[in-house]
Image (spheres, rainbow, N blue to C red):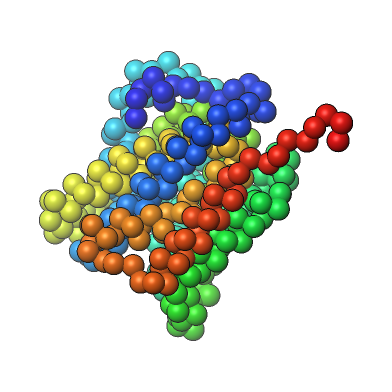
Length: 316
């Protein structure tokens, strides 16, 4: 993204966050499309033999290498220094490698259909509830209806696989729910601590890369990466590290800035729908009629939830 655009910081007045909802929607859709591609590329990496820790290493180390030179050259690093050590560590923990590993570990116990509903649905529900409690965002009938349609759409996309799974599927469901709650926490804290999109992106990318990179090399080692085709490694670096960990995270933070955490939280839940569309040209997979229906429900839910509530007249 353009460096000058990335330097925009959060306003002093929180009520101004919704002054440009169309900009927020554009940023949110950009994040959803990129995260949809992230799901497709992650699946491709797993097929080639990569594990969650390998993907996390490529994602955050490459993102750190991209962001660090920019961070050191920009005056925005002063905001980062002023946050101390606890806040950056919390953000990196909630949206960094631990988040990715917790969510991916759920696949060892539960089918992918569970993840498609529980992780994004849990993230959206948690964000909406906390936004109402902490920031007074109204739980309007439109928002609740949109949330219901979104969850229905995710369940429809998951299909019959939602009701299947081995006896230990509940463990995977807990991991998926935990990952969704972690990212919801990131969303809420970015707003609560008034951290700019630029700074929150730099925190997760740089801190995650420099903390997790050496740990990965020490514990797991690069053997699987060395056995993976170079084109696949480059694919993971570009989509995971640059687009997903940097561009999408920045775009989502800007969506939170303009829409508030409650409304912005609907966009990550659109990632499975975007993945279905992206898989058509990339993987040659055509959606089933059930998936098309789920995509329609999810999209309708997003449109309803993002409608601005009617303003009351002064006399009301």
